[in-house]
Length: 181
Image 1 (spheres, rainbow, N blue to C red):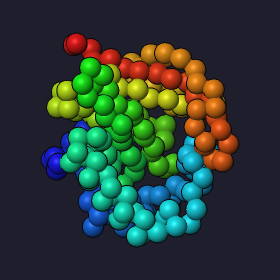
Image 2: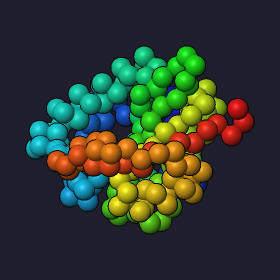
Image 3: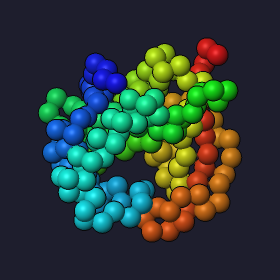
C-alpha cells in the first residue's frame, strides 16, 4: 500500500517505512516535551529507534489491510508533523479517526491546516470515506480552531474519553462529512 507522496505548496505527505525510523525518531525527540500535554504518557523506550521501526512496520501492515493511512508531514529536509487516519471502518460506516501533530517550530503558520486538508482530500477521493472524526481535549484551543477551519462540526462531548498525559480526559467529538455524498 505505497502511494506517491502528496505535495502541497509548502509540504509533502509521505508514507514512512521501517528504514525511515531515524526520521520519525528525530521528530518525536525534538517535540517530546511540546507534545506531552496532548498525548498518552510515553516511556523512554517509545522514542527508541527499535520502537520507531516497529511502529512504522505496524502502520504499514494496517495500511496494507485497509485499516489506516499514516502520513509523515515533511518540509524540504525534515519531518515536521504527522497526519494519521486510523480505525478505518468499511461497510455502512465508511469512516475513520484523524489524529495529527505539528512540530513546535511549525505551529501557528498554517502548516497543519495545509497538510490535513491534503490528507482529508486524499481520504475522501481515493479511500472512499464518507466521514472523518477528530476529537480534542477542550483546553486545546489550537485543535478546536484547526478543526473548525477544516469544516469539522461538533457532534458531542465524551467524559473521561482518553488517558492523556496520565489522566483520563474529556474530549469534544467532531466530524467532517464528505461534502459530495
